[in-house]
Image 1 (cartoon, rainbow over the protein chains, first blue to last red):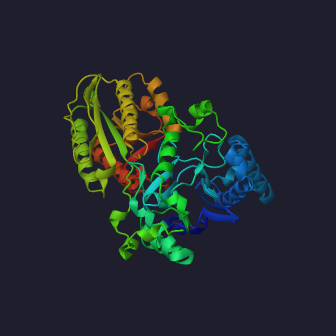
Image 2 (image 1 turned 90 degrees about the horizontal axis):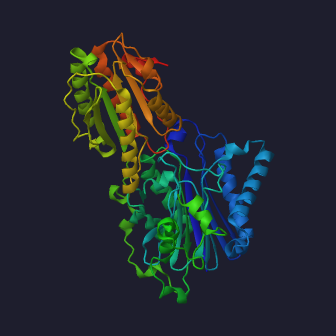
Image 3 (image 1 turned 30 degrees about the horizontal axis):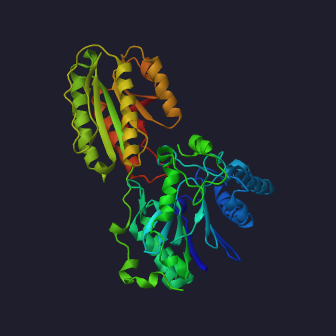
Length: 293
Length: 231
């Protein structure tokens, strides 16, 4: 199964005006059958959050690539994974003589290996996917604080804030990561869904390829999105080039989303299907107490 | 092997975005205005308060897209709650009839305002609206009774960024000791400048309303509007 990856990240107008570097970072990593994309949005209030964003995307991609099977089958649990990633980040901070707390950023990560999917989400921004019918669905909603201008960051006790999902690719055709600067224009808060126009980013990549897609993303951001926000703007898309014949016919168009909904609504439904899609290594009690409030 | 998207007709217009192709996300801003209409506010202050509040509503109507994000309600009180208003959009909101009478129970009014703030937040969450911190604007001549408990709650909410609270004390002889328990007080020496307080409020709301999520904003300095900040 081959995948193409394209993305764009642009410094927001407000940051240009105030001479603040772009605090968003996007990254991708490929090794053998592993494909990963990551996006991070540095906390505006922290001095070195741009460096934190760059580090966390690379560190987390490499960590998941190295430990994919163990994460997928639950040998490495969520707590252990968080500790390891945090540890790597701390070491980098030490090396750079920067306080760890000043590296705070959000994180979105989607990693694919064969037909398996792992995603990680901390903070705001949205992870969505486009299915084979071209319909876009939310895979992971923004994890905001109580108010819309508050979110969680990698350095703030994130074992409670990290959403980890494991599942099968099924009929997902593309996955799209957006920072809040981008998702504010495509995620409809009221109904908690993506605007259908989001699928254009995946469609363009699928048809025109990586280089043209990068140009397209930049042009859309510059022409439309920069007029709508002062924030940094980033997206990164991974698109499946080909589909295996046995995956085309039978799958429900919405299975991944339904599976996520079961997690999200767990508090109400008391349903979780660990076999198909589950939060790694996390006992039900933990979920009840910490994750889904 | 089969190309998934080959089955779809690709329209080149798909790559041209219009306004309809973007999410329209507007954060709601709940504003609760608590007005002291006790007897000590009689004559000129109450008349000026009424006019200024009406002008305020007219003014905020002119702020771009205001009706999309503001929900305003008025509370008036003396020793009882006289008017317990519902939240309404700027266009639908009306200033209640203000008649000065009775004593003053500030605690009861602010307690009601806090309950309203909590209720509207629950409503926003239930309906899936994004929202900014509730604003409570309290205008009084300063005679208010026992407020320790509710003032402590207000301060805690402000410290936790869960509430924006403005106290505006009017009149040169206004005793502001109790109002200061809620935090900063903007003292309006001359009652002729009540309208300035509302002007400042509408300007501040314009700045907030036009801000994007996460963006830091600078609210106009109240000193420029005849408001003296009392720490």
